Length: 573
Ligand SMILES: Nc1ncnc2c1ncn2[C@@H]1O[C@H](COP(=O)(O)OP(=O)(O)OP(=O)(O)O)[C@@H](O)[C@H]1O
Ligand SMILES: CCCCCCCCCCCCC/C=C/[C@@H](O)[C@H](CO)NC(=O)CCCCC
Ligand SMILES: [Ca+2]
Image 1 (cartoon, rainbow, N blue to C red):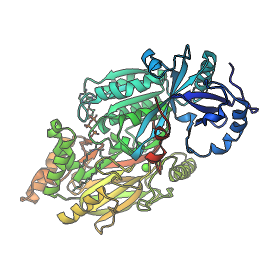
Image 2: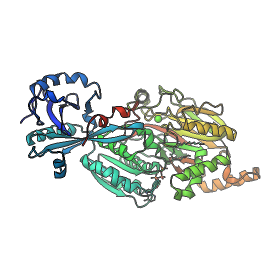
Image 3: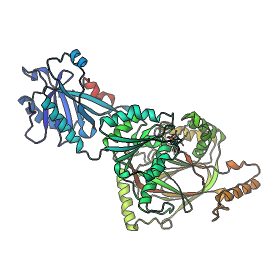
Image 4: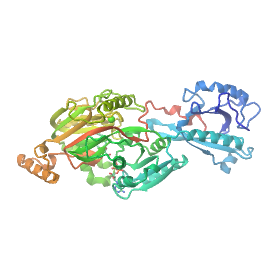
């Protein structure tokens, strides 16, 4: 039996069954929606078999479009086609058939649709519904129509290159990928070439050689450090291919169009958390499958004319630099190494002297304390980056340090943090700068001046609550396009010498003579760049607007509550 069509083309509407109940199922490719709603038993007059399209039903179906604007109506479910994960012929096992007393359907024909179910706190899960048809032809027709609709979503990846760090976080990267991610990829028809890394920087180096044209995306399974490796490999590769010298701090870097997916399996997972809203491998896998795309700002860090690193999360001197240094010998503790070192660093309560100079990001329409966090499809990011693009067109992509005013601040700091995204993570769900934007071309520069231990604790504690962590006289925050930092005890010796090691030794020797009571290693802190220590303390940083793209969509606002979850309304198999 052929399913019938409504007068307007391509709308498919049939009566199918879900768990022995009749449903009116509609595929509306025009509106890109699949919906199903329960039929009252008496509306299926005299006929009980699934797959019968009644004229009365079709008349009623014409009115369906009106209810499409609502995501879920009582007893009905509507799923956007963009949120369908996979469609496949259902595997009906004999036992199930018998137990469900469906023997009268001599040969059951069914297909299963998996789709995104929103849970609490931005977590996504896969909902599953099996539609039963009375005839093979109808089942084939539905499968064909749904697969055609999915194939039209050309932004979905088909072939991925996956790097797994088996030692990140709790050392469960491989297990997480195999158990939670690979089955979803395979159900969604995604082919994956998997590389389990054998040493640090394996993924980075591999990205310089690999044929990227083969892939629609790169996935890294690990933490921020592993993501940073992939980021360096990809940005480095793209600059090399476009003959751009990354040692030039003013270079206009080439954007990377291939997307990166992060399956969180690290200790902080800040990049994943701040771009998805949660560090959950299944949620990340689902964002990858749907082919989400989130542009992301990247900061480049140089010492004089030498490229040091890129950063996307935290570039922190003082407190976070010391926490990282202190954690390095305790890697065996896994994620707890940061808490242990954080506590120790807090107790030692060091401050550091130096000079910070920066240029404000004048094009941005937001500000760090406007209480407007970056959300999915962010208007602030869109508008700000557009304005920046216009500005760059005028300047012909030149990056002139001297053109605009620099603000210079000399002082004693507990911490200097530059973040180009909020840095939300499980330890701090709103992050170091809750209103920082993922793709506005700016970074928030947070200066925490020397203060009492108690005040510093009050500031830190605010990272774990909804209160404003900048509301202290010793904390300042600026939205910047770049900044430079020179530690006080570097200035006099920061010559053109190429032998940095000698400069540093000379530097510390001088300091110790000047301040016999001080301990050398405490004069300067070090920079924590996305979880890695930089070799240099005197640095300059610059934001590159939307340099990379992630398989993410930013943090969605107002997630649906559990009550509106389709699984609660529908009887699922
Ligand atoms: N096979 C490997 N052996 C040793 N180190 C590796 C290997 N693969 C990757 N690495 C390195 O391990 C470091 C830490 O990895 P990762 O970021 O995954 O975990 P983490 O440090 O526990 O988490 P986070 O960065 O979120 O705090 C990275 O800098 C990465 O370069
Ligand atoms: C009394 C309670 C006070 C609690 C205060 C908690 C404040 C936590 C803010 C956390 C900000 C993390 C920023 C992200 C940094 C990552 O690039 C980096 C690599 O993964 N992680 C760390 O450096 C790890 C940094 C860990 C810091 C503890
Ligand atoms: Ca930004």
